[in-house]
Image 1: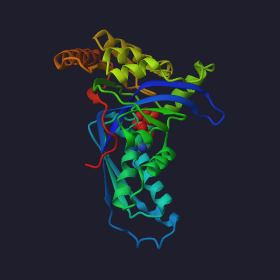
Image 2: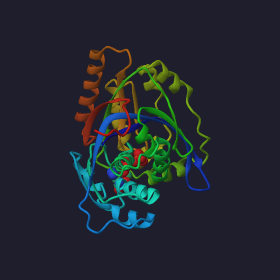
Image 3: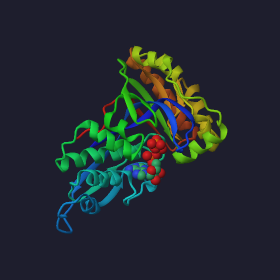
Image 4: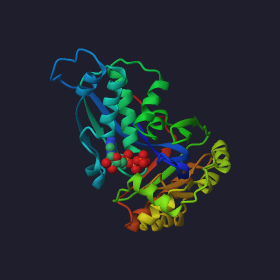
Length: 319
Ligand code: ATP
């Protein structure tokens, strides 16, 4: 399976709810930074369970490995049953009562704890892979429901493209755009835990208003206008991420100073996203702007890695 990372074009966060979650308006945009997830039937160690939902689930996850050129990030990927991809395998077996033992390999390219939903992407890929491998043939609606039970960002990784998520982020409505956009991402050597960023947000914004969709952003997307889109990028969690990792402010300024059309922390950070062009712009103009932003970020010594990508792209895909 190939599954994309996401960047948030808008992330509006309401006040903390009684249940600890926050209402969000979350415009997801899938970009061409992919994890590859391989799910293989494992040699059966015990006879298949005689049926019964619990017994199938107990035996299906037979191990997980991870690789990829991600510098310090790879060490943060859990290799046991707590990995989101492993949890997806177990959840599908629990819900369907099906499942033969599988091993999972993750070829990671999406930064870990980087605000680009890499774990959620792997979970979506594992869910779809097991649906195919076990011949479950579940309709997309049902898979999306299981995905939402695994995490707020998992349904979008199944869907891909560009979509607005409401509620906790799991109710999705597609947003189409005639434009394709080019991005530069500055990966930090540090990770930021989503929970700590939300905690910091609650501390500094106890009076947060109800989140609302941004009309300027919707128009920029509908027009495929990269300049208007760059100006419309917003993330309510940015201030909290900067409060926890102040150096991110310099990273954002470096990319903007080099000509990026928009600069924003992706999700809960610390990855910084820079829109460098797209739509009707001439390819040479975009390439020149992209090269300037990449060179400035690489020369700044502020990030571990700088990568380029385009969006949007489809969600989890069987290769
Ligand atoms: P989001 O943008 O959805 O808030 P994120 O991109 O910031 O998430 P992830 O890369 O999804 O963060 O990982 C968050 C944490 O989840 C990691 O620190 C790691 O401990 C754990 N984790 C579980 N499964 C995975 C996985 N398959 N890949 C990466 N991290 C995983």
